[in-house]
Length: 115
Image (cartoon, rainbow, N blue to C red; front, side, top):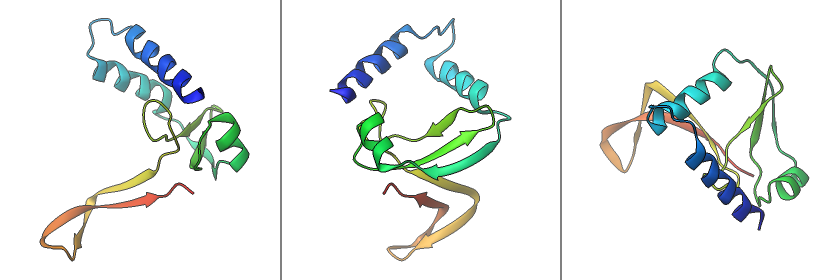
């Protein structure tokens, strides 16, 4: 039920967003910049089982970053908030290979898993 409520709320947020002549991508990029640029991460932890289950209705736990303004940042599986998501570290200037694809290079990534 909570996930359905999240979906309804998110759908309304997206439909009612004040794009003011901007594309949805421009709008959401501007909002993310406003909330995240020049912020400092002051704490990092996995959410507790109680938090995951009771506050979010999730089966898995993910990382929560606390910013210097007190806001917290986490990742979820999808827009509807159906479960915890993973952080992916992307190293755009580092490459790696994979044994199954010997002639290809891939941008190096690392995953901080849900638990």
